[in-house]
Image (cartoon, rainbow, N blue to C red):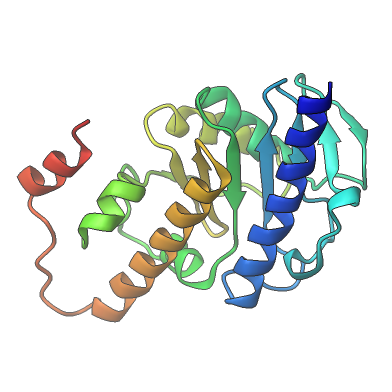
Length: 213
């Protein structure tokens, strides 16, 4: 029991730390976005609704059972199902980060991109930390029909871009999910900066070599 309590305390503190780091560096703003972490018991901690990531309280995080039932903490975000469907599709994941980060959202609004892989492999670190980025179609905020669309795409990719909404990324650890999210946002920024220029992304062979175990 002590070790489980210690694990939960550590994860609560880590969620607060990561949330403030993302907020302070303008990866998120207002009360947008949410973070979750899964305990070894299968229980889940998540940032609550209408909470700024810049001022989270570890004791007020929403807590869910392994079955997804809210049992304590503040009222959960209406996007809790996004995290739950990511965990269902990515069983090895222990954390999920969802943001409305500016450049990734801008890319999600562009027409004519490949919905199976939205961003080209511009850098090695993008390929290693994000890989492929499929895009789920638009659904209104809180629409649980989005869960099925995300789950389908998350089976083959730990990162999914939601059309006209923002990215959601699962990781084996919260730091892994955070770093992948930051790499995605910076690559989206590069992509937008370079639109109209002749690009020289990594070749298929170069990208596949980075994805190999």
